[in-house]
Image (cartoon, rainbow over all chains, first blue to last red; front, side, top):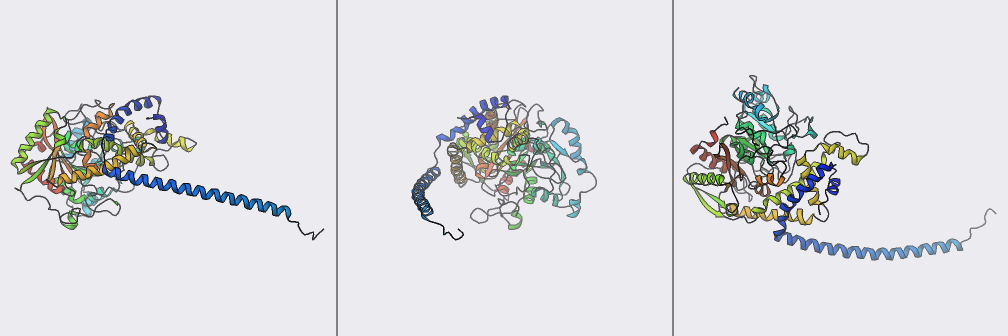
Length: 98
Length: 462
């Protein structure tokens, strides 16, 4: 759960191996202490969670919509490219200087 | 020169100061003193914790990282003290960046408790507490983020005031955890603390969290609804103190319990009525505090990267540069940065930081509700007396437990005062009053009447 090297990297801290070992051991008891909040319930938090979940659902729906719209656009662009290529092939430059 | 004599007598033994100006207490009055025609604090020797900026002293935050940092301006609180004529005598030792409960985490060596030189003075404002306890300063300024004024005040037998969040400007304070940091006051008497509070409190355009409820400008402070709060006591009035049920259920040193019961009797004789109240989340305040504080620490400490602040590094790429510059942090600072980064990291943010902030709001509400039934909460400041130097240095959780009764007032923002209430085996012990927002004067009045009937605040270390 607590990867001391990864957290140190994120914190821009370089730990000696001795420091890393000592902190890792100490964090076991520190996390045991802070984990006590997991037992507690907060009404405010439940409301926040509901709001967050609703937001996430909305975000997912929007991203699916955008994805679908993107697919349509991609198909349109591909059709346009094909038409342009066809036009290039069919078009003959006027032989003004020949 | 009494204070300078005490400096000469004590400093070598206790190491309360990081820097000191012997001339500050000399015969020549200071410029500020002259400019104000003396001022209300004329000639008061005042010591400042070394996390507050001073333009005539280096400000190190007791860290190697800021060893040579020379600020170009004073913190607002220092500026106000100078304007009132106070003599800033020096910068006091503390835990590095105010992180610790024993002053052992200073990069410049530990401060010692004057009552027993083998014991800690508490922390993080240990140097400030010792400077007042030994008579080296009349008043000292400290900072209280989780008990850093009240816990050392309790261990050193002096008064320690943590004001309402926002009452004293924090402009010029080196930030540790911005939603919890307050500037506090150490003194021997409640009247000294009251006088200094009156001078240093008030709104400050340079600190957005400072509050415009200043007793000097507006008469009595305003409460949260904008109505006038009754300002202090006129004497002989009865007052109601709340006894927190959850504290009574916790394990306390029997001797601390004894002092608590004796003080309760004395306060009852002075007009106190007691009422039992409940703050169900109080036992969780310590884990809540360590999650929120460390998250804010990890953010505030990011500026010490060798580019914005801190020692320059030699590394050639940016990632290594940061690491090299930040290698000078001490163990406790690193521990808190790591914990803060962890509780804010992807996958854990919601379980720790977000839950803690929601529970903090619930706790604040519970403290508010409890204070509707009484004038102040009455509880111990610390579960024990001062512990031995080195005893808890490798056991952070055990060290953190000394803040068990202090952190909740920082989480809720309420004012709290620790006052000397007794001695256990010749070691001082303090008790604490936590009041409604902006009721500092009332708390100090209660303590003042206690001081008149006892002599704990007059005792000095041998």
